[in-house]
Image (cartoon, rainbow, N blue to C red; front, side):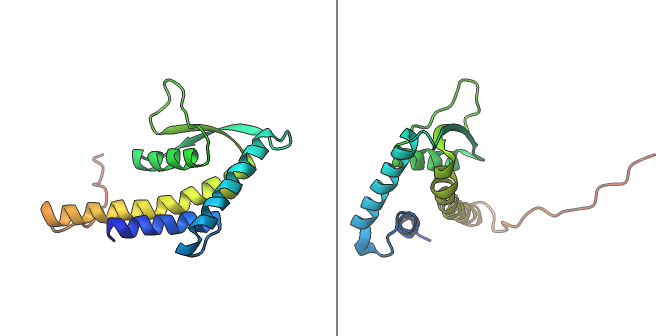
Length: 146
């Protein structure tokens, strides 16, 4: 997968979550994103949709960067407290928004990005370090001396 193909795939996922189904609907996707942001803002102002402070723990800096960018694209300010891990992201959002929009979109985007980074890593290792990129052999533990 080339970088351009990755970008197209990520955009396709984004359009899926904002309601567009083809390239010609980019304007519709932008207005759908605006509707999602307005809905998010309304839910933040609505007393029934209480804002909760969420702590998201990312596995690495790449997923953290993706997640913070996604939060910002919805107008949500990501933050973390002093002494929290670098991979921790805090945000104040409604549970409904997290469950229905934010987390499913993040998981879809993260899956594509992780596959891409993994493929690039294997290719670089195979082409420039050593051709065998298989996992280490799993062996039985040595017997204990009694």
